[in-house]
Length: 250
Image 1 (cartoon, one colour):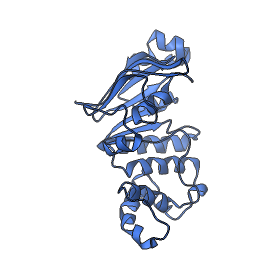
Image 2 (cartoon, helix red, strand yellow):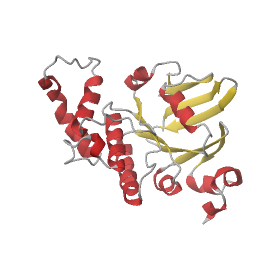
Image 3 (cartoon, helix red, strand yellow):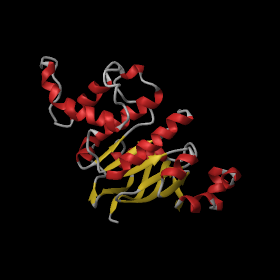
Image 4 (cartoon, one colour):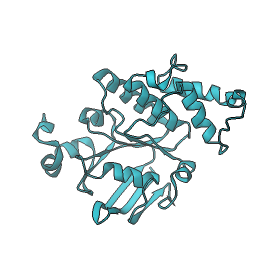
């Protein structure tokens, strides 16, 4: 399969601290790729470099062969890469439908003006309802985001990312803070979303990784410690020592 997303020698320093140190990452088109690592390994920093929220100090990032390192986030979105965030980024006072409509409208490049009639946004509602259905929020369209459960908010965030029709979707800890039932629903949603795009996700739950990931890259102290499929990673002595612990063999 062709390579969808590639990082070559990506490093990022903050006042002398090297958060990423020569990271290489290659994600094939249609792949579900997990990024693992302990706290402070550089996972979110890598996501920020891939999506344009941070610029690499060294190295380059390519999306379907086109260099995107140095581009601002909205330009990277235009080229087909979107992401969700570890911390909720929805508009709490807006409904599910309104959150999706605003995201769809933003893609047109024409900002919402307070003096425009509400009807001006209605053209986006059919597409917004389809996305709500896709992310398991049918029947919740008129519910304020603040009143959704934690799992439903995460689904809404994925829905907002999907409004950009990404070819590559980055999910930053999509099951963080969820109970077992919400985790299972999110796994099914991620699997469904991945049928038509490439997905890269940061995750700590090894059960989720085992169910979803085709390949895994493990970071430690800003460097790639190991890469491979789930069985290779769970049996890698370096990974066991640095991160997973002996319980991974269970």
